[in-house]
Picture 1 (cartoon, rainbow over the protein chains, first blue to last red):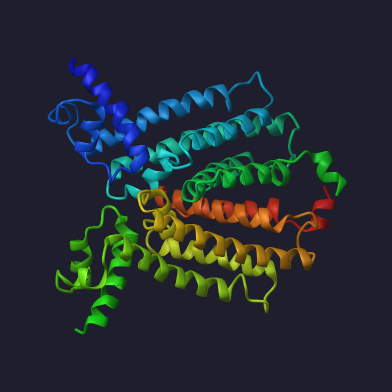
Picture 2: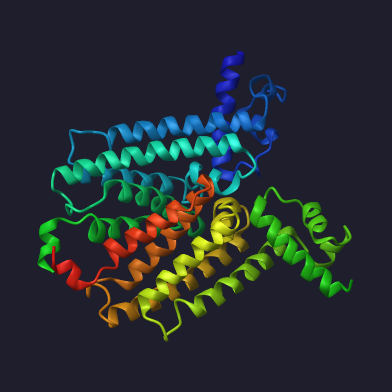
Length: 200
Length: 200
């Protein structure tokens, strides 16, 4: 295999193993074994395990960005439908791994406490996720689909953190219920139509 | 030191180190060094690192139980005041460690994926936390302090997971804002007085 495809193999297999076992519990040996590349290959491509961690975060985030493009940022669909689709995709994704893997961003947040560069990358990623959620919620306010006094930035921030928490509990409990319950509450108590509210 | 006080030292110092560094990143050597006990001491008291993990979880949870008793379950105070106090305590607690430690339950949920006994203990702990939150919310519904159609169990489940997510992001971002934002949204959009709602 060429050096370039070795790197590709290491990132692909390494992301899979780290997502499953955690960053700390995954050794360089685990990564090269999963990738099926020679032992020395890892250090040819990554100066440190931290450098590898940053690259798998970026790889995982490039997938998140695609998801955001076709859900939260897709102006062709009604805003709340985009948001619901975004949450449904998380449910499907968490379910696909028997609820065992969780979200790589959340796992790194909990676990990787000794790398400041990884932490700062997470901060950037969360800022981009918040911005996409706020963009969608501003569209919902503008369309009159939610209470007019809804603060899009506040709700965006809380959706981001609450979804992380729901994914974390789904992982601990091997059950998708925490994500479903958050979705139910979000669309029945937070993002409500003004006229529904007026009926009370 | 007696064997009993060695065990106590290991649990106390070990909980502190694991809370700070994570379970996977903490070695038995780290634990005995932090505890200031002889190297062999750990295996005198714990058959495995997993057994030690279960004991520090219980120790951490006994503190949570005290917090719950004097907040969520304290019938002498109004229900929503108890809930707010419970959330405020999390904010103070996360802030006390420069937002770096997070919640041990959340950290274990993200990180400790290969121990089924630790996972099952987390499931039990989360069930008890949910029950205490639901107890408090039922009192709020009975007192007419929230919308009468508030589902206490649903809201309790979502508070538990959302608070975990907010603590996780506070940890990643070294900022207490995610917890504050969740608190603001909870008390302005979810747990609202019927009369406030009726004004819209």
